[in-house]
Image (cartoon, rainbow, N blue to C red; front, side, top):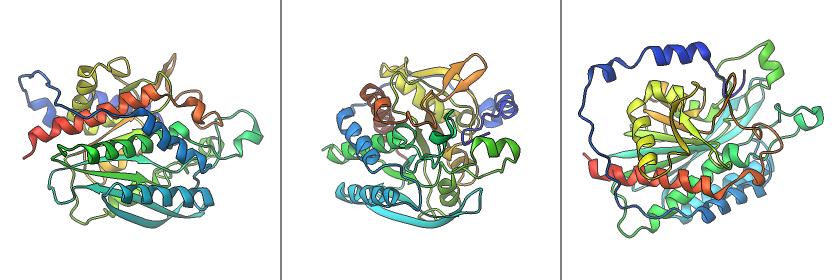
Length: 337
């Protein structure tokens, strides 16, 4: 068991028992029309990923974590959005106390209709998928697992701020902290503890940065930077937010990215979106790389290893995901209520 726990029984339940409201509603499908959308710059997104990695492993309670967090706050402020630092103390599986902070940037906070975008910005303190004990003890750089999602969202924000037509929906970007500090594999197999991952999203879901905060829907980005990555319809997303899944994947298909966004279901996993859905009650989907294998799915050979560095990052993948997110946002403004 680990951060992205694959739950075969849960997946069976989710896919066997669709949302009753969805089941009772029948609608005549309409053709998706893509609205005019600014162009996403993958070179800029790559720079933002590289900048995070340059600080080193962003493990809470370490100097690289502090420096990277300060950089993210500064960059959001430079982009002219409202910035909130939500500081909190998190307790790990071992009882250690983490000084953590969720970093929130709000574009056009005066608008009532809001879309939530999120990624985690911390990295794993050990590489428990490595085979060599010496490598297992080292923290990972998390170029794809963490930095890629943050880099894409920074570029999404920069793009919509620079667009002269201005987006007519509010956008909140949350960089969740303390996501990747769950139990190592060897400990989890002996004594698995629930809810020891995604500590930042758990805290935010119980203590939103604004007491009356609501969002129309949310999109989480995790491991979205690797070459030839594919994104299946993840099971927890399908269960909690089926209409949002359909919206995102249909948009990607219409935009010509169907070879990245695969129109097939994959395993239900525990990631930040699980708590945003179940606690905050905001329908959120997870765009996350899952690799089909003979016995299910895996998260790529670099996952939770020292190989998760800039060599993994591919500008084409950043482009596909970033452009899809932008397209979803600009399509949404035509349905503002």
